[in-house]
View (cartoon, rainbow, N blue to C red):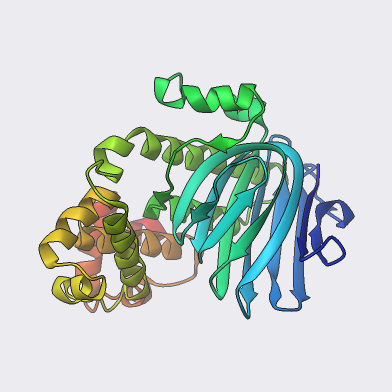
Length: 326
């Protein structure tokens, strides 16, 4: 099982998993952590391999638009998350290219593929989990919504679980950060990673299951959806100093009424609800994983009054931040 990445032709190999040296811990978990600096492409990639799945994540900086060719000879179900950046991918066995934008995710199946990726952003950050198909299928609900994807796996074809990408929600992002920052060792690490991978898969499947209800309004045009994704990127870049709705609407070339209506159609919550939930998830992650006081966390997520922060936190999670930290 091997992934090979190269620029222009096979001689310019950037990464080849079969040539890498993995560290192995007491539980048999294999781990790879590499940095690379190749022409216009530089970055870091980490991979954690367990029996039924492997976790990979990294960040890449490019000095100009880059086309990266790949060969992947593994049969896998991939939970893919693009945390930052935009890319377009062409696979030899698919008639059309597909794009994955910033802060979106999907699940796809493939088996021995070749293709190319065009990276269109100066920085690309990805997180992906490759599951063995037999492991994935035992958790795929017996729901008509997923029948087509089951047939793709059975026929060893290639395809996506959802016909469109979905927004990465704050709870998903929290789990991704927990996996990346995992401090458990040996067997406890294995238990933690297995639990978090299944929890993340649950959130993906549930969001796709509810797609027609709360993610995409079938009457919403692609242009409007693109504008809502752009609005969300602006929101995430200005969490501690959010724009007013009228200014945000103007920047994404729509009006305030359309912004409020379509943002909720696409993301299942209001603009301010999304800001609040994202801040609370960030705060929860800081309290659990960083040595910060409640007042410091309150300040970092943009609350001038720690009491207001504590009230909002308790409304969200049902427990005060001091109790969670203590």
